[in-house]
Length: 222
Image (tube, rainbow, N blue to C red; front, side, top):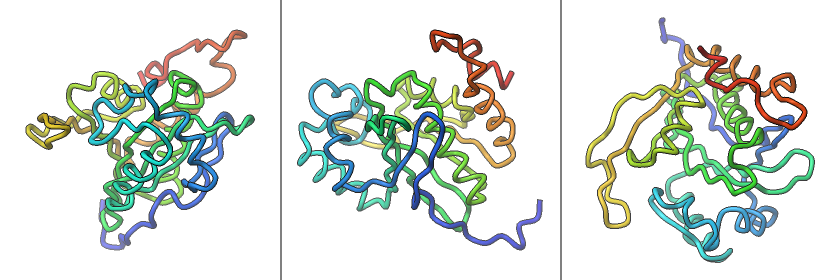
């Protein structure tokens, strides 16, 4: 495919992304900090940060000062995940490693509070973030990276449709230990099939009266 007319893409994460079950909003500490801190910080949430380069965070000030400084320094666009009807703050995810000239961006710093894990809101949030970069902004590549020992993150990447691309050995020193980083990605060519699977999984017809899924997300891509 010729890219002779290619132009850099706009930055993602500059406006809300509304869905049926969830809505994502660019972070505004005046609006979101207390609820986000309750959802992902404190001792009860220490495990969320086990494989991340920083954290855990003990309170609002600690979260704002430490995580906020990292996000600002690296140019992350933090998206706060809320329940669409109640507006409860459930977690966050960020656009990072932005390369507008190449149409490539990473999703990372994915922190799901206890109410968000294994929920329709969580899956829809990941769908909305991917749709934003591919459908609205015309990106070519969407990445997911994690500590190679983080089995839960690896499973999540594969469930959401990212393809494993390899392991960068001795990639980082994190909290005084070595991190081998597993790389996953999807491309604009992959996206139509992944998008259709997300939409089929999120359909109300895929859930029984108790709210249990009838088919797994991966089955819709089989």
